[in-house]
Amino acid sequence: MLVPAASLARRRGTLQLLALCAAAGLLAACSAPAAARHGPGQNGNGNQSATQAAQLSISPANGSKDVQPGDGITVSAAHGKITSVSVHAAGDPVSGTMNPAHTSWHSNWALDVSASYTVTATATGRDGKQVTATSAFSTLKPRKTVQTFIYEAAGQTYGVGMPIMLTFDRPIVHKRAVERSLELTTSKPVVGAWYWDTTGCAPPAQACLDFRPRDYWPTHTKVSFVGHLDGVEVAPGVYGDHTLRQTFYIGSSLIVVASTANHHMKVYKGGKLWRTWPISTGRPSLPTPNGTYLTIDKGNPVDMVGPGYNLEVPWAVRFTWSGDYLHDAYWSVAEQGYINVSHGCVNMPPIDAEIYYKLEVPGDPVTITGSPRAGTWGNGWTEWFLSWKQYLAGSALHEAVEAGPNGSTFVNPATLTGGAAAPLGKPSGGNARAFA
Image 1 (cartoon, rainbow, N blue to C red):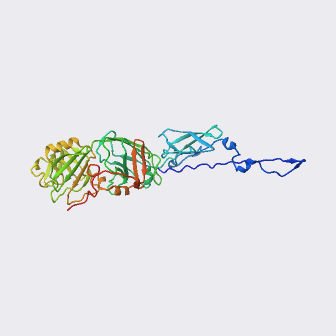
Image 2 (cartoon, rainbow, N blue to C red):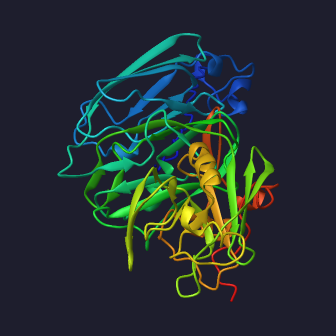
C-alpha cells in the first residue's frame, strides 16, 4: 500500500511590539526591546513559545465524501505533540504509526471502501493544555472490485518448501501497491520474497502471486498472513473490498533427492540423511524431468491410466500436474536400483512407499536429478526451480521480505547475510536443467 508522507505544519509565530516613548510631551525615537532581537516567536527566555496552544489538523477533512481509501488518514500537530488518535469504523480496525517527534500520525494500510470513519485526535500544546479535533468522512464506493484467494487452508500443516499462493479474479496493474498491502507474521524469523507468476498462472485466475522463503521454511513455524487489500486500487478503477486472513503451520523437514542416474533416492528427515531407497524412474523414452518440485496431493490408491496400462496404484504421492508420482511399484521391484522402466513416475518398493506416504504433507521438497529431460515451469509447484536472485526479480518491488513474530517489513536484498546450504536448507541451483 502506498503510504503518503505526513506533512508537518510549519511553525508560525508573530510578535507584535509597541513602544510608546514620550519625552517632554513629544514622541521620540527609541530602540526596540531586547526581546525583538531574538526573532519571531520567542522572547529572551522563550516564554511565549512555551505557552503556545497546540493546533491539530486531520486529513481527510470533516465532511469529506468519496475519499480515496489508499490515501489513508493523516493527523498533524503544530506547537505541541499528539497524545492520542482513535479511529472508529464498522469495518477493519485502523492502526497507525507516529513519527518520533509525535507531531504526525498516519494510518498503516488502505482504508476500507464504502465505509464511514470518525477520527478523534488529542494533542498537548506548549502551554500544557490539551486540544481535541474530530473528522468524520466516508470512502468511495467502487464500481469494480477484485476477489483474492489463498491456497493454504486454515490450521493445516505443510512442508518446508510450501509457497504462499494467492490468485486474483482480475488482472493486477498496480502490483507494487498489492505487495505493500501484504503482511506476514511468523513464529520464527523468515526471509523471503513475493513473485508474480506470469507464465504458470492458469485460468480462471487472472493473476497469481506467490511468496517463497529464500531458504526452506524453519521447521515448526506458525505462519499468519494478512492481505490488507480492502481499499487497494489494483488497477484503474478496480479496488479490493475485503481483508484476507489465514493461519497455517510448517511441519517437520522431509526432503527427497532422487537420482535417475544411480537409481536411488535419499530421504532426509529432520535435517539428517535418514534412508537411501532403490528406485526406478522414467524409461529413456519417458524420462522423469529434473527439478525441485513439491508434493501436491496423494491417494491410496490412485487410478493411473496410460498407454497399455490402467491400474490402481497404492501409496501414491503426486509432484507434477502431468501425473508424476512417487509410488509403490510392486511390479518393478526387481528393476528398482538398477534400471529405469517407469512411465515417468518414481517407482518404489512397497514398504518404502508406504513409509514415505504416511510421513508426507503437501509442500515437501522432491528433487529429481541426473535426467536428460529438463523440468517444465508450472508443471507442479515449481517455485524452487528459480534461484533466489531469479525469484527476487519477479517482485514488483524487487525487495526482500523479513518476517518474524512482530510482522514483516520490506528490505534491500543487498543488506541480507547468511543463507542455507543444499540439500537440507534449499535446493541446488539450476536444478531443473537437463544433464544429458
